[in-house]
Image (cartoon, rainbow, N blue to C red):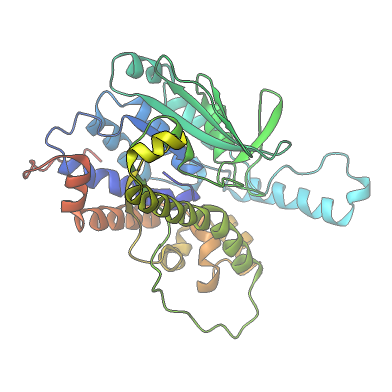
Length: 379
């Protein structure tokens, strides 16, 4: 599951639909869970409750369908005002400021929410009981520049190291999720061991790499941006606002690399399909085909965000409005911060519809058949 701030609500709708397609919604269909940024939080929640997949989805639905921005970052006027004052002082009198502001927003409420809702000791228990094989969350090191996958898994799993990619086997904690979801400039970096880490989507050259290294042969991918090659281009005569530029930059972090990685994997699969296995063995190439299924939004989430931007608290709207973030063109930036239920519910419903529209593909990919009974959500 990829990142994207509030856009990760779409993933929860996908999971709700998957649950309804399973013959037994209690059984976790994803033994290996990998997440980045907000997707890391969703993956961790699935891992914590993986002994009952249906219960895990219900918990995620309850949180995401009732979200308020204040549960993720300080959205009250006082909190926004204090942060804004620090940045103004740093910009105007940087030479005299001893402590520079760490981020645009204070995500202390998110730490409290995760600490309250997730018992991380249940991850190891789920692995020992066979409900889960491995869980990985990715963060980006600000000093090394490495994309690091922090993972828990069964016996015999070994860490890996590649160019600008590494892994560390460690018990996962709330700090790993905060680091993985620390949007650049927006949320503060988190120190893990010897280095400060930020959002895992930064410099993540191969988003599917952790799943492959952990042993996955089929990968169910949930994106948070449209992946169609046929989107019509829009005319833009006006100079882009700061919010539009920021949204474009964030899209390049969260969306573009995943599409490139999927394209590369499909190309490798095509090559492997043309080379006999015995030839691969003689050449000593440990490559194997990876089957993928991608579920991605059928609508532009930026446009949905622009319709719901008024749901943000007044302080956040004022902050975004000053840089064009409340206009339609600035919907990209707003979509990452719009942790408000009108927006998250719209994304959940979209993810649910998009997945059921491909129900046959999902069933075939998961190896299930028939028409399972509908399960009611407790949200």
